[in-house]
Amino acid sequence: MQFEFTDAGRILAGIALLSIVTIEFGGYFMTKIVRGAVPMTPFQQAFARAGHAHAGVLVTLGLVGVLYADLARLDGAVGWLSRVGILAAAILMPGGFFASSAGKNRTTPNGAIIMVWIGAACLAAGALSLGIGVLTS
Image 1: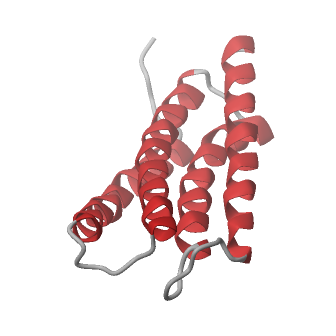
Image 2: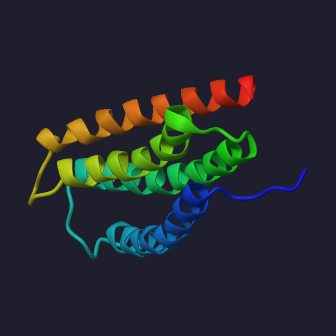
Image 3: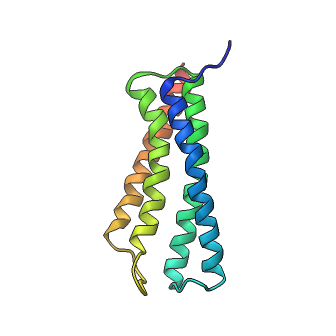
């Protein structure tokens, strides 16, 4: 059997790979935070670390998910959810950490924390549909 990307898988993987440059920039920004060059509360530092870590891990997991969805030849709603769910979490969860801690001297999250929970739901839906889809393919 020869592997071939679906058009959706190829496009999503390409976009995810290009997004790694933004995560790399986030790593540079993290070095500035750790050195004290960017004034932040301990809460904001913790959320910056969480956002950066979630971005890197979830983009990597999303790339693997795209491959598995294409290898299992998942199509329809399950195929789309399998390919997009984890990658959506890679945007929503880090975005929620960053946005909910934005602002001078913030010590608690603002309403944007809901993005973390929406991202977690996308991650669960994507991982479940991918896992079930792979098992039943």
